[in-house]
Structures are given as C-alpha cells and as structure tokens.
Length: 461
Image (cartoon, rainbow, N blue to C red; front, top):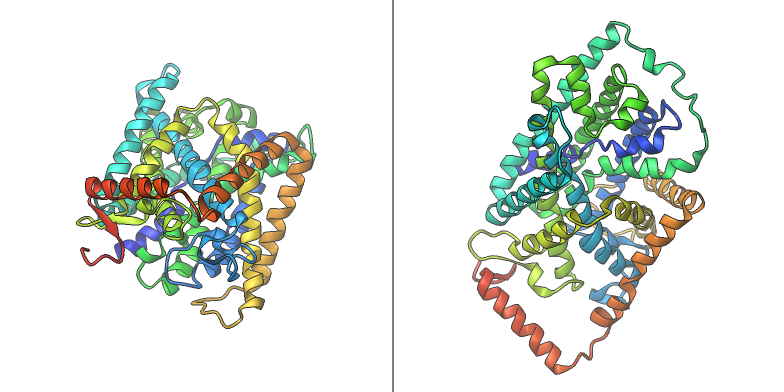
C-alpha cells in the first residue's frame, strides 16, 4: 500500500520554476494559460506513456518504444535512436534535472538564515550537495523507507501549495485583481517564445514519467497506475494554476521576474511572521522531488543496463538490502558534476529540444505498435487520439523551436549526436579485443565483491 501511495507522490514533487516566467513575460496572462495547457498536455502524455510502458510488467524505458524499436534485426541491443535517448537521459538530462531541483532545495532551506541579504551561491551548492548525498544514502539503504518518506514529503508539498493558495483566494475575495488587468496585452505577442515556455512548464509537470520507471515496485500496476494518472495530474494541474493565480493577486509580473524565490516573496507580503514556514515546506517539497527523482532515475540506469546499453554492474542489486546500489551510486557523481557546472540551465535548454523530440516519437510508437502488433498484451488501452494529439503537440513545438531558437536547438542536436560513436563502439562492435573483455569482467567482479551485489535472478537473493 505504501508503494501505491508513493507512486502518486512522484507526480506531486516538482518545483514551480520561476525561469518559466522569463519566457512568458511577453504575455502577462501567459503563465496562467500555459500552466493550464501544459497540465492538460502532460495528462495526455502520461496516459500515452502508460499505455507504452505497461505492454509488459517489467520496468521499461521509453526509447524501447520508438517506432521499429522492437524489430528482430535490432535484437537486444536496440537501434541508434533508442540508444541515444538512453545515453542522453542517463548521462545528461536526468542528472541535470536532479541538480536543478536540488538547487531549489538548497536555496529554500537557507532562506530563513539570509532574510536580509543574498544567499551566497557557494553556500547553496554546498547545502545542495549534502542534500543529494543524504538522498543517495537513503535510496541505497532501503526501498521501503524511501517510499514512506516520499509519502510524508508529498503531504508537505500539498501543505506548501495550500499555504499559498488560501491567502491568494482571500486576496481575490477582497478584490485584489489589478495585476490581472490587460493580462494578455504584453509587449510582444509573438509565438516564438512559446516553445521554451512550454519546455519549462512541462518540466515542472514531468514527475509523471518517473512512475513508469518503477512499475515493478508498484502493487497491481494495471489498476494503480491509471488511477495515479487521473488523481495526481488533476491535483497538480489545479494546484499549479491556482498557485500562479495566488501569486498574481500580490506580485506583479515584473516583481515576479526579479524574485529568486517567488514563494518567499509572496509569503513575506501576506503572512507576516508565519512566512518563515513557507521556505521550510517548500524545501521539504523539493527534498521529496530529489528523493522521488533518485528513486526512479536509478531504475532507469538499472533497466538500461539490463537491456545491454550500460555496463552490466548497473543491473545488479544488493544481496541484503535488495536496492539497485550500483545504479544509485553512479548517479551521485553525475549529479555533482551537473551541480557544480558553470551553466546548468543553458545545458537543460539545449537538451529540451531532444527530450521532447524523442518523447513525441516514442508516443508515436504507441500508434505504430497498435497497428503493427494488435495482439500484444496491454493491461490497459488509451484512445488513439490521445497519443496522436500529444505527438503532434511535441513535434509542433520542436519545429517551432527550430525556427525561434535555432542555436540552442542545433547545440542540443549536436550534443545528442555525440552518442552515435559510442553506440557503434560499445553496442554494435562485438569483436572487442580479449584484453578489453577480460579487463571488463575483472572490473565487474571486483565491484560485485566490494558492493555486495548480484544479478537480479541470482539464487543468492
């Protein structure tokens, strides 16, 4: 039961990124409209991806469902687009996304100690590094405790949202609506900034796809996962939209863009001394995002290894704790590199293009499989108009971003293509030198002894 509740909790653990408003500033009403639109779009994608991931009961990665990803000639090793999605997700985007949400935790946890001055960036990163390490240790130690803590932190997330929404509703009742006047009369009504605005907003909703990584951890997934989709996406869409409405009852669009911690700015104006509770609850919410993200992303490494796309050691689990210890450990240095890199947000902007391109193609794979393999086992089906609409939306935004921001899109495309040589070198090339294979086997055995891990089907478990 705890794991079922935790599955819903993953959806509720994403921060509202202030950076999105920079892309929506041209239209003052943009934030409310895009949050609502993105919530609807993400719900469609969650249903579509749910239909993909639950063709089987095992963990699946979305790259396996790219069109023609199941054809016999590719076999276990998959194809180039699938490998690129796998490599790009595990090495760059997922660790980067974990670093971003962790930075929010570091900032909000220090906010009560730096009320009258700016928080040093180094202090934020050091506290963030400690938080990441604590989460990694927790996920290496116990699956059940990770799930229990996730449930508690989900309630903290909801509490933080309510603390913001309730005063905002009271402000609306009092008639504080002057920031809503001429909401869509911005300086520039061009659609060119829309792709990045949606990329930012859909990132905030993107906790849903973590659920698909932990199918094996969920009891009765055929029933639990569709239920989690409906409940969690409805709650966060309403919650995020109302939170943005609450902000604008008190803060103007210009003030919001200047604030590094919007929830704190809002609470200081309305809640008085109680405003100190807001950064604490938001920090706990972000910690829940970190915990849920690490819990799920480590399974991504685990499955990618099991499918033959990453080193074998990452698909092994601890003999006593039954946690994917190597997969959790390898995520730690990758996240730290992202955390202390100079321009993390630009990197994520570059990779957003590839992320939504492959996501649109993967969901299109559902349509392909529906016709190519109509007899495939499907615990639940989604109407085809849902994946069709979502794929169209993703691909339309990708095409629009090619026109509106060709530099960032081109850089993201080039970063993604760097995985092509790795695919042919490590996946396709079967005739590796004997010394390389012996060295690889020796490293794997040594790590097994040190970490006390074995393959999942081992009799030692």
